[in-house]
Figure 1: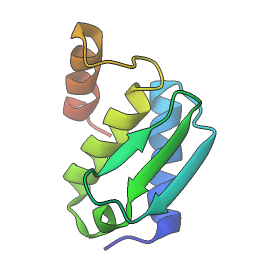
Figure 2: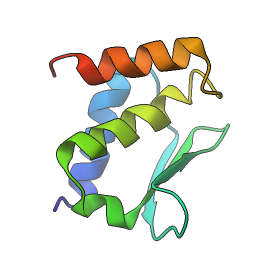
Figure 3: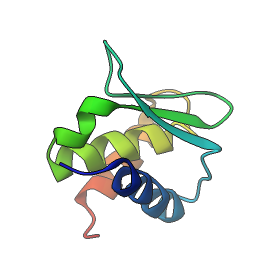
Figure 4: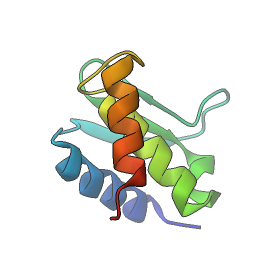
Length: 89
């Protein structure tokens, strides 16, 4: 299990690699999703994600950060998602 601070560090780490700057990062209970991203750059993560595996956490973080560049799940989004997840940290 990771802490809020460790989660936020991971988000900032990946945001530098992806080249985006989230405006806010929040952690709270969410009933239906693992995370969300607003069009203004606010990322919200489900508190329960902190108990998940490192690989799952990375996938969710990268997914939400890519939405700051690509709001939909189009071809470029999918290509970059695969690229970041398959790259060695």
